Image (cartoon, rainbow, N blue to C red):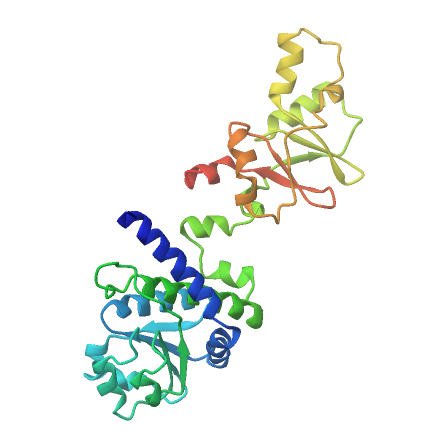
Length: 315
């Protein structure tokens, strides 16, 4: 005898397979084309009950695409909020049944704007009152006992949104820089930051390889972090007080030229335009290193990694 746990596993697999099998390109593209048409206008989302939460989520995701999206409250619409909607704007209605009585009554009024219905019911009554209906496949709900609790349908609305988002990004040429502008804070904000944004440019670069030991030491003492050596305008190596102390004090090698102490293969980060998130393993491994050079693709050193900025983000 199958347990409830195993039955719900079968239910979830069946729901996913049914959704992906029945969903077709036109079901997604029809909404994407509407979003592209109204991308510079206000886009409103509307839902009742559990669909109200989906409406808010759709609106928030649209904001991530830099769309001017707002979730409407049905109770407030007929008490003045209808006045904010114009004929050049878009209203997206989310309703599992497509028969929601409150929305039916609302649409009987003369409401401006292009209206789109997203529903799981191909024979919904609301379809006759909107400009476009987008159908979301649903076999049955996820509760085995009543087939009423809108769990699978909510999941399918979210899966449908994944298709819409990706197709919209492809067709609108929405890029990473667009996304980054709207997400400067939080974990997403960090993940969109480039290494260049964590660089300390207050470094001393030495291109003279004819200085005496005393001159190099004085130059090093005047530097806040250490010395970066360049040869032919490309990164050559670094020198820190630790390098000098190691040989002149610990190993008592006072006759050695300081140029021989230059670390030509230090831990360094190439390509400052790469995302910092891609270098976290390296940063965490050497986070106690105070002098990690950041080098451009052309070999030019732009500065050192500023650990204090990373500490501020609790990285």
